[in-house]
Image (cartoon, rainbow over all chains, first blue to last red; front, side):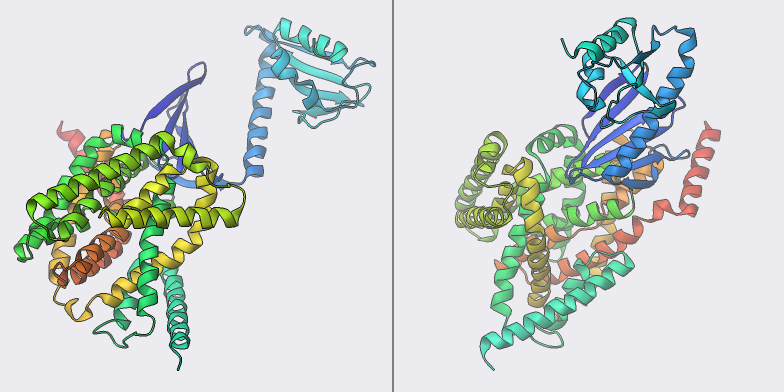
Length: 175
Length: 395
């Protein structure tokens, strides 16, 4: 091995490889189930390149794209939103022990008129807030800066315990 | 005309010319180093217009150039990266050293230049140019490729090996008796090990000396420390360049990142001055007579680099095409080869060595830049694929 390869398991059966690039930065590779390899090179000066490996030559990354901070964040948002959607649609069979719940924001909630990020719901309860329903409009994948308003209905996904945690958190604040 | 006035005119014209050539280099996707060397040759001894008033200034500038070149190289690596590469790329590093240093040494002996020149020319052919190779990988969009860590591993080992090679070379070019020479080498190696130890273990303390967020004191402080250590290293014949390299390694974290930002423009100026000055002091009338040996040497050592790169890539589990890419990418020699030749020639080793090194660097950079693109060509990819299919059918 030319460089120390750290392999982290980022989910069931998902392999992320970390390779040091001396003098340049770090490369993270994701190898998909179909054997395709996607890599992100994080330069030390903060830039990043996204690349997809060639079909014919599994060692070569064809035409890597360099992304600005905002572009990378936007791409990550798009990906996580699409993951949320596919999880939501697969919830009917509830095999994963995941539930979805609509929680009306209590009128005396300590988070009223504060931002979604202030609740730290995901860190505190391990449940995710995937949408907010406001005035019959759906705000899908709300960002942490989204303010919470009176009458909001919060759509959360998580385990039974996690969802109960979200309800308590929104009603009483952190324990 | 006043001396200083003439200096301003000469240096100004020179920088202007370098800028134009640099743009030309960008246009054809070549490293500017060959252009700077040629520009220096044109104005130097035996060239078209001699260049006198500013020679002292350029000499000082070129010495600072070497120091900054090495200091910034050191800043690019963290201590952990050096250690990890030392563990993982040790074998390719050894193969690289043997395959590429020996042809240089052999040619120097064949030309009858003696053992000291052989050690110097071995260094010239050994070390690939980290600057040119890293830029090539960036330009060709190969940073994500799987063979890239293997290439970088070889470069790191080479740069680290220079920390030991240069002091040894400086000690032997002085031309002392065997015992005195051995003592000088021992002192040099001990000093390098001590500085390396401080850099690796207590680098954060060194970094704390400098304010990371204030550009001006940071620039003056890092430049000051680098020149101070370089000078002290020179004094105990460890070579200024190595002192500067070790200072670069000792600095880490935000100080290192910001320091390399503020020092890069200075490095660009003085390193370019270094290449021009090397050209200026090289006798261009000997360039032509050295072209054949240089071509021969370049052909052999491009082939040996190809083997080195392919071997390093194979060890990393990279396929055939990637091995070709790694091999050709390592071909260009550059700043280190010129630094080594400069060190040898100023200490009185065969002056034709400078002409040979100039020819050699020009050839390997130009050939290497084009060869590196060959594995991306359609005909080459098809040829490799056909060979693989034939091999599969044969099994």
